[in-house]
Image (cartoon, rainbow, N blue to C red; front, side):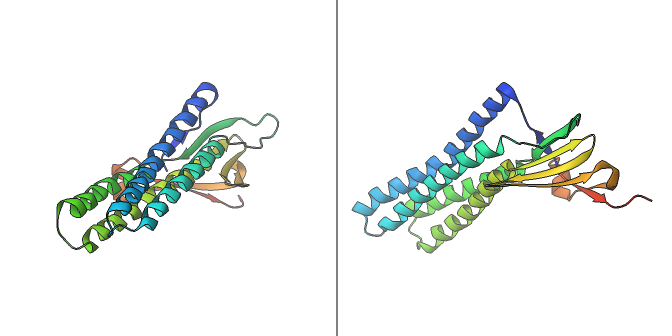
Length: 204
């Protein structure tokens, strides 16, 4: 798959700030929505107070989880041997995560228009809101998950690392790699993505 290079030094610091900013941008609108719902619940009997509390709690949890996963996911710690040289180090592409989040935005706008600008039954804005929420959370969770995945290729092995509360590495020695193939769907080919499949086994 298309990947992004893991930075070091000053660029690592910049990436940390950028990713924490993204976590803020994702969480603050949800917290703000919760605050608005709480205010409306005091004046509008059709808006339940629990909806505002639930939105605020969701936003705060996403913010805390985002900060934690950003910090942990930005610091890969491969256990390399003496003289082992890292050739490639990458994270999975964030394009699918960004695409899902972008799809959710017009759905939220449609929800606001249906709720505030029409007299349609509440089921219609509720359905569009749930679809938007589904795409939004799918994108956010994919983004945070990809921060924890690191692919490393050295002159001795290929390493897959996943870090969340613990380090889970899988590796294949270079001498056991028998085939490398690439798979792409039409959408992946158009968006510059794909999946790399590494097959291992005993050489004859």
